[in-house]
Image (cartoon, rainbow, N blue to C red; front, side):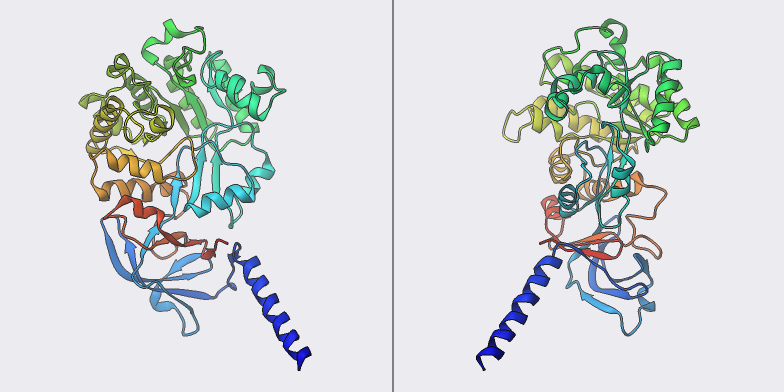
Length: 430
């Protein structure tokens, strides 16, 4: 009898260990097997509607086609939304831990708009169905002593690559593009490095000639250093990139930078004016858009990534970490671009999780809850337009989150993630 009891206890212990080991792994289903998610409140773009969802082989199918033997998941009236995305984040290591952090925060897709050269092994990691999906620009295009050269040589380098010199970073973390020929050389190098898109830098375009060759650190922020490329070369860069199959994104600081990027035909503005100001009153006018500028920018269909919560990380002041001056510039620019029909995306720069950015945008009180949610929940589809993501129709990829609370009532409810489904599989967390 004692031996039988010990055996039964051993079986129970083994079963518990198996459950714990499997808790953090995707729960795979057999090919062709269907899963029916019942009684969910599904995001429509304007609110939530009660409906069932059916999944087979990683994609949505018509719920009526689910067979009698389908696996049933009762959502019990919880809120179903597309997976989150981060359109501007530099921390995207190809590690299980980093992917777990991203998926845990609901971020399935990201664009990294400047990094040291990403290897083919790393890109293969991002292409796995059980990891977060990342597109990389590799190194950005700038000019000598311009952003981000100072940042790599004085901040990133000493931390991650203490033995690297300028020669190690050049052609790797950044490229020079002073002339059309240099731009072509840089783009050809990015082709060989298999970049997914191109990043270039515009900083204070209105003062390009006077800032060119200045001391790269002006005592305010590395982002305010020197200059970027010559604004007169922006259109050439965009067109030369397009000939090589690349979309182009521009770092911008001022309203003049944003207008230059839009008129060059750029696909994305990585930051919006006001994302960082140093809280200097004299910086406010050059970072403030006019109605005419907002309309001209929105008319180009350039994707706009505010990264406005970045100010809270870098200029702590006031109750929520952002000064009234900065908040005023941000609120006006956001309102103008949204009302002009601009396409806004979620990006943070500093962190993979998008909650702080979503909550900050909502706190500016110029967008409705529906507008804020459409920014957050629509970002993924813009980052990977060749795929059918961010939708719940037949043949859309079955990537979604289940929330326990309604984000229309409180944007903080985006944090209340109960389930994470990627390619039709549960990304269960330990």
